[in-house]
Length: 572
Image (cartoon, rainbow, N blue to C red; front, side):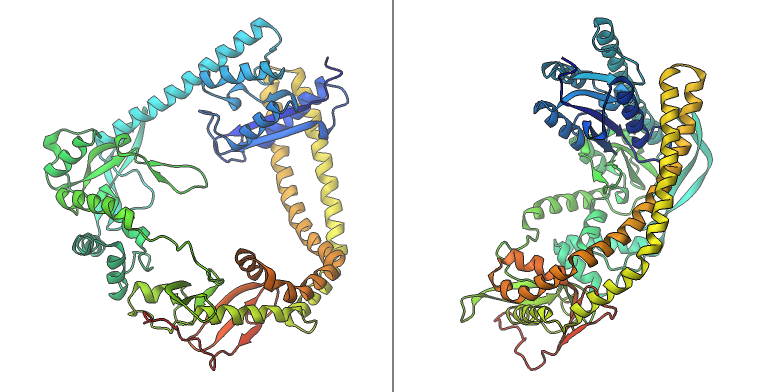
């Protein structure tokens, strides 16, 4: 049966957080690869499928590469799954039990090289299930310990660190607190008077206008900026309005949280009408992603050491207003026919210009639209008052200009030829460096292979940790070599493209002018973004900058004598 099984060998690796130390994903894969080759004859790289998830927890199986592996198993393309350790697959007993049943249904062996399980025997299968039970127990114990730590933090009402909210600064408290059995420094928030006034103003204006847009406009018109000197946005204003740190711990605050079933880790008497609210366990933090706000019933609310800024009644009122206004929030028009969104900038202030459609049509039956500077719109012409170009005419003229790149004499073609000549001069030097680096990498990988083979013969011995450490050192060295190889290959790849496909690219550009008119609206948008880096409208002229030129501006189109004023009844 084994000799006739032509299915692939799958390797799965996972790590909750990105790190170059310890059992990195690359180390897990290399150990599994060597294990497969050691126990199966004539296995090539083509026989091995690799699936890796970095930044994903083992608490569930909702991991992209893990699901891709299951898809291959269900297609009967996999004969075994090898992982470094059982908890790389799952820390949940229920999930693992179902997975093991599915592996059995498709006659797929499961190998955990660190746990040294033999899944072909009843004892091995029983031991594997026991380990998965302990893995889940560890996960649940960790979660419980984190929750207990949150309660300890709630007792102290301290600030945990990170970016301080506008209106406050972080100050160390005299003494320390004990968390998870360790002494830690404690911090609290102290008011910054000037910033605190801005926070109060934002709440006041929102309650007065019942509009994020109008609040945003007011701040822009009065040149009120963030603590970093940037303009507020509707997103940043909403974040401020929803942050409970500004809420004064008073009777209204207590009643609000109690009515929602939020865990309040303080006595009602502590809601003294002076201190602010500190909410723990409020966000979900994932590597590489912006923080997400948890449902309020998962928060742990306490009275902080800091002074609050907004009364409980006003804060609760604002939450109600925000909830009611969600259905009125701006939505991108579904019938948008404009081509230059994301490319067109205002020459006066530098902001993006977005299309503003009307309900009218021109003689050709097209919807009439203009391009409007975002800063002009948000500030109601206070900070920018640039003219709005006629969108229909501007789009047509830009398209005509882009068609001109099909001529051999165009700047675009000439600059591509210049890049080609420069690349040809560097190729020999790059090749020499690449060959030397690849030889060094090959020698290092050979050392790792020898160490892994030794590792397989010395499980559960003092030498195991030492050999693993040596593998990690070599692996870190290899990563640096690979990064340099990648940099050089990206440069030589550009050269290969230039020498082998340059003529074909020129032919494609020559036919571009004739084919552009036949493209769909979305295809035209994509085509424009292939060649255009940026478009600037200065109120009279439009400046078109293409990719690949040494000069910042390589095409200038004078449109002052064209009718680019917005042909719309509601134009400003």
